[in-house]
Amino acid sequence: MIVTFLGTGSGAPTTRRNVSGIGLRFLQAGKWWLFDCGEGTQHQLLRSPMKISQLDKIFITHLHGDHLYGLIGLLASRSLRNGEAAPLELYGPPGLDRYFRAVMDTSPVHLQYPLELKIVRDGVVYEDEEVIVTCRLAKHRVPSFAYAIQEKDKPGAFQVERAKEAGVPFGPLYGALKRGEEVTLADGTILAGKDFVGEPQPGRKIVFSGDTEPCTAVRELAEGADLLVHEATYAQRDKELAVRSGHSTAQEAAELARQASVNQLCLTHFSPRYEDEEGDFTMEDLLAEAQAIHPSTVLAADFMDVPVKRVRKTMGESADPCYNE
Image (cartoon, rainbow, N blue to C red; front, side, top):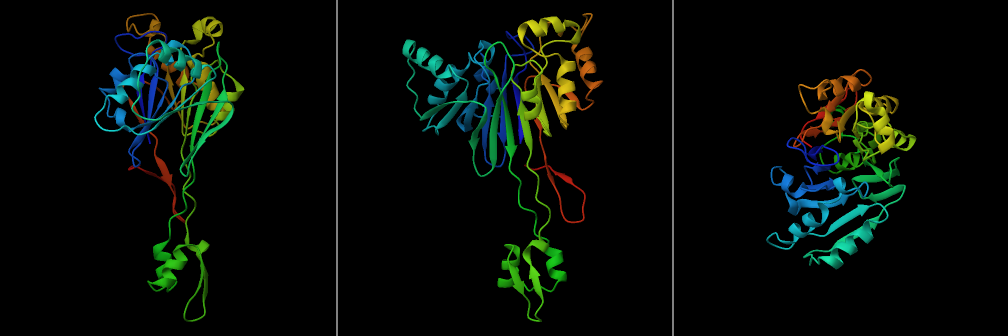
């Protein structure tokens, strides 16, 4: 899985950063999901490796314009692609349905594909054979939801060499053992399939905070995450602004990541006030504030990719990252 940032600014676009939009790419499945859709997101897509025809789901965190105003245009453009577009699922907070209907009533768009709109609340919002998506209500000026994408564990790898050493002949017995069944060899030896399977391959966990002040709900949701994408609108010196507007400082995001034992923290949703490299406080200073608390922290940039690799384990071996998924 790869997280691709389409917009990393807050409030309004700048020459360096568009407003919020994040893609989550499932490489093997050939699909991707979108988290938030600020104005201009579809323009950013044209400069990214993601295709609008492969967009499978959209998750909106909250109804502020810098996270939402690109939605209708993107949905309309998806209808204009050659060929029949696949169905699309749209998830978001209460009020998203009213917003969608109001825009469609005022400026109708005939979508050439089925669109299913689902209003979320705390708990599981989507599940299939591969992943489970959970959301929690964060702490912002309007209802805003953080989302966790938890990949389900994969079965352990079959230990081929161990089976050979045990004298298992290739054929029906070998197949049965590989399926986890108990088999009896010609000499009467009984082998249990479970003894020839490595440890389960742990699923990856990615969490998107959306707009939020530091809060228990997001910390609990992020517990043990491989990657936490957390807003960091302000520096610690501007904490008063963060409190008034319902946002987090970089230092607060790092502290939350530390408490939640997050592996990697990626900060986003930056105020443009820190973009001036000649200013008295820069983005590098913002990063330093966070890294002092959580060293494994990076700053997101538009079009930046963050791979989240699966760790594969085999019996008696240390964990190694899998680079091709």
